[in-house]
Image (cartoon, rainbow, N blue to C red; front, side):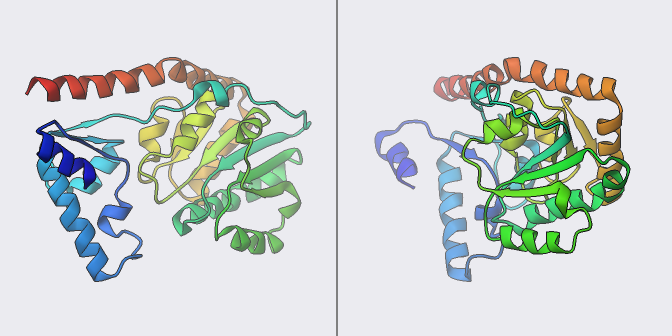
Length: 271
């Protein structure tokens, strides 16, 4: 609202950047009716003043515009620190390690981890060297630990909680798997691609948007994830092809994001 007021007061252009939809649509039901109505009113006011709106993904655009009128918009991704995630310190493990990095504050992301764990059951039975790590903290971390108490392959799974040097986890992994039923544009997938990991993503919400052509998209079900991970684990050529796609994508990814933002502001300034 401060930016909106400054735009009116000083007669300067305003560009609104929408990185998700949950807070604007009360998707989690976390707000009462008064706060929800206030957020919606303030959002409409800002959008009315904005010269253009930037959405972080096509999924965010479609979901947001279903509830708010937005005529002039662009879809531009979020840059990531490619150098950081490409220089982690690997640890030799002698195992095949799959990794998920997520935020366990949200039930929809926790459900994604459970989907992966269910998918891994037959693969764990077939591959004694297979391991799975989950990095991320939040209120559902305790529930994940409780789930693992009755999980038959719990000795192959590590729930790490919040990890500060997460780049080291990327460097020590052989593959990255991400299933979520919440994200508009999960940047952890970009971080995994920046680390050169082969990526498997569930076909839900904004996950396919961020995986793009540099990874495998599968149904976000235990069977769908199992099939994709089975190929990732057993097909060396396919796994290396996905890793090469990740590395190639991230060479120019940030430049494309910057160019997208510059294009928006060039248009806005010329109006």
